[in-house]
Length: 263
Image 1 (cartoon, rainbow, N blue to C red):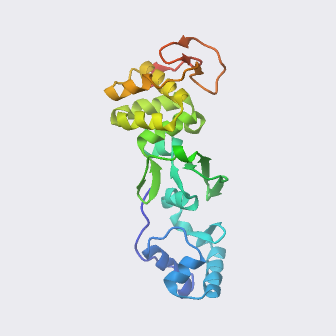
Image 2 (image 1 turned 180 degrees about the vertical axis):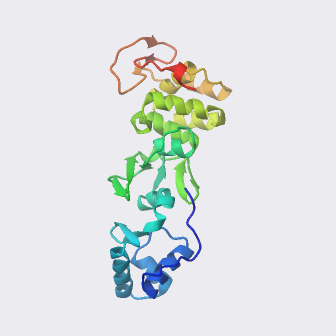
Image 3 (image 1 turned 135 degrees about the vertical axis):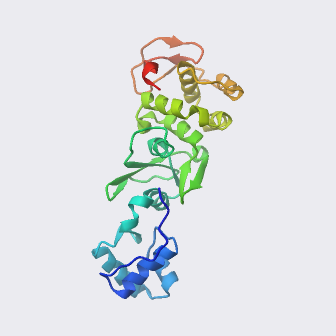
């Protein structure tokens, strides 16, 4: 996503005071704002600011996301990631949205998928659906700020997506993305993150996937074998419990990964 444009914009169809608000917000690189932010920047009283924001909203120059939280309408498309992660805090972009951002999938994702530690409902902004998923605090890690928004690291993106495969297009899509990204991933961070995530079923799954896709091994991957699930688990948690058994990873292979189609 592009950064907020810094130039002063020409708002010829609105009043000088309304134009001043919009230009002040833009020059200060503010995306999400309300009455208090405008008061602080302009030194105007609450009534004046409130009335001006209402007028700008009616003219569709700004959009109210939630109570006393607005964005400049024309900034939404190029800043939707930043808006999403500022509306829901703390949060970071993950799952299929992050896989698309990093270029690991050809799918163009319109839904903005977030990981957060708090319960939040999904909502929409000008055709973008913001879909938050709640994680335990201990699983909320390995994210970074880039281009003014917060996103999972590539390694954590694959960990989160493995945890909830339905949020990245399913097992087959996950395998395609993993193969595309494999040579660029930090294997130590991936393994350490999987262990820290504390879900042995996931370790069994990714171990099997790495083998079946014939991905290049490193010494760091040896730690996976000692942390697999003690009970047999399904390769695809969304499929029925049937299929051959893989003893190495304690996996019930209930999904035939089409390796010949994964390039």
